[in-house]
Structure formats: C-alpha cells, structure tokens
Length: 209
Length: 172
Image 1 (cartoon, chains in turn yellow, purple):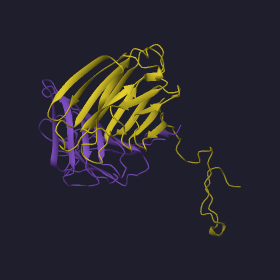
Image 2 (cartoon, chains in turn orange, green; image 1 turned 45 degrees about the vertical axis):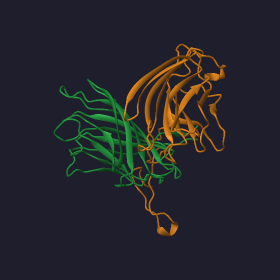
Image 3 (cartoon, chains in turn purple, red; image 1 turned 180 degrees about the vertical axis):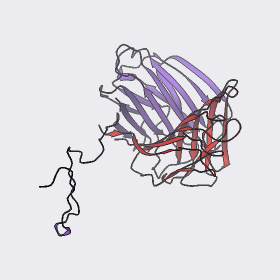
Image 4 (tube, chains in turn blue, red; image 1 turned 120 degrees about the horizontal axis):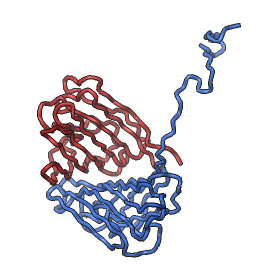
C-alpha cells in the first residue's frame, strides 16, 4: 500500500498519465473569491422616441449603486443635457438640487441649480456632432439603502468630438441631491434628456456589496 | 446577480524600466462591456509633470482627441487636443518617487458600431515644489474597431513600484 506522500503514475493505456492525491476538495486549485461588484440590470434603446430610461424595484441588498452608460441624443444640436429625474417615482416635484464643474477645452465653468424637477449630471453628444459618437457617464449613489442619510449622487459624464462642433465637447463632474427622496432608500432611478435617446444608448446598473 | 469587475492582468515594475519599456495589455477578450485601467505610476524623467501616454490597438495614427479640466495650486482651467494627435494622456506624475494615479474607463470598448469614448480621473504626484493637479478627462478614439490591446508609454521610464491593473466589467 502506498503512503500518503506517494504520487502514482498509471499506464497510458488507461488514459491517465499521473495520479495526484489531495486532502481537500480544492484539489490544488486556488480558492475562488467572489467579487462584490454585481450587474443588476441593463437597458438598451432599440427604437425611436425613447425619452426616459428607468430602473425599478432595485434590490436593497447592496451598499452602493453605480450606473455606467453610453449615451447619444437625437436632439438637433451638438449636445443635449443628461438628467436624473423623479427618484423612486415619487412624483414630479421641484425638490432636486445639483451643481457641477465642466470643461469644454476652450473654457471651464461651474453651475448650480436648486428647486428643480431634475438634476443635470452632464452633457452628451447629439445629432449634429460627430457620427457614431456616444458620450460616457458613470453615476454613483453611495449608501443608497441607508435610511439615516440623505443621498448624494455623483456623476462623471463627458464626450469629445475632435473639435467637430463649436461649443462642444464637455467633460463634467457633478453631484445631485433630492429633498423629496430625503433619507428614503433608493428603489427606482430614471434618466432623461431634453430630446430622445439615440438607438444604441445603453444604461447598465451595478450593485456593490 | 452575476459578479463582475474581473481582474484581467496586472503589471508591476519591480525595478525602474529601461529603454522606455512600455506596458502592453494584449489579446484583451471582447466579452466584457467596459474596461477599467487603474494606474499608480511614477517616471524616471527629471523634471515636473512628465507625460505618460496611452494608445489602443497599437494605433499610431492621428485618431485621438481629448478634452479635460484641471485644478492645481493656482489654476482652474481646461484644455483640449484634437486633430493631429496620435496618443492620449494617462497620468502626470511629479518628479522622483511621487506617484500619480489614474482611473481610465474604456466604455463599450468592444462595440463595433461606435467610436470609443474614455473617461479618466487623474491625480498628479506631489513634491513640495510641485503640487501636481487633479483633473477629469474625456478621450475619444475615432475608430469603430473593438479595442483588443492597450499600450502605455512612459515619458522616460516607468519607475519601480509603478503598477497597472486592467479589469473587465460585464453588464447583465
């Protein structure tokens, strides 16, 4: 009988070339560590006339949310404004506030808004700028289920168009707050632009544990 | 829900690079939605704010542009580079062993119907004489090809301790 430290080599005729003995079910493999960043849902615009994209019944099992988006507008202009709107579908009210810093290459600036129906998170390319260009947006909502805190949304949104259009492009760093939401957990999110989203616009919602 | 944010590859310089050695992430699978490159990097360049650069797919054509804003100890300003640019900017470390960090998002990198837009947040390295800057960038690579490699370039050489990690994020 072989001892526990022996490695056995069986005949090729049996289809085996070696036999190793292990003492746990990992069998020499590394321990699998599951990541804490999970994909919740994705929405892609596939038709005309889509003016809003919503995520509803957001699971309350994560700590933070992140939305990653590729966005283009059908607005007959160089760009359109990208908003977060009507958190938790709680009804339209002028209780959102936001501020942002932005750069266009030619200039930089800041803006702040209070008592609004929606919060501007940045600017995205529209119909009159470079073809096949989609803006990128990353919006974070930290501690979204905590009912002891108001929620602050953070956005990094931008696009470049290689100087295609005067008054374009934009890179924007923004934050937003909803007084109507208050300390409630976030269960629904809606994104809008002034015109409609171009086909191919995509929003992906992720949860971070 | 499917877990994502998967490490694809990491490069760490155990000693200073030589000969302007690049970092190349190659054969990037097209199975993710976005790529995220996290860089913590310094340069052997003697002088302030060396420019460390990136390209994709080894494309050395004038297919890159960017817009940014930045703030340092005295300025809040913006800039852009457009036609005639064959690279874009990764990070601007300070001189010596003062590391900068950058988080560069390649959004929808495998989509063959769109040009590629990247978002980048950078924080420059610091010395007592050079406070570096913080900046936000949007980059454009004017190509509808899927990104299958990312190429990083030092100003002179990547300094020992420079680390670059590429992650893949896949949407449901």
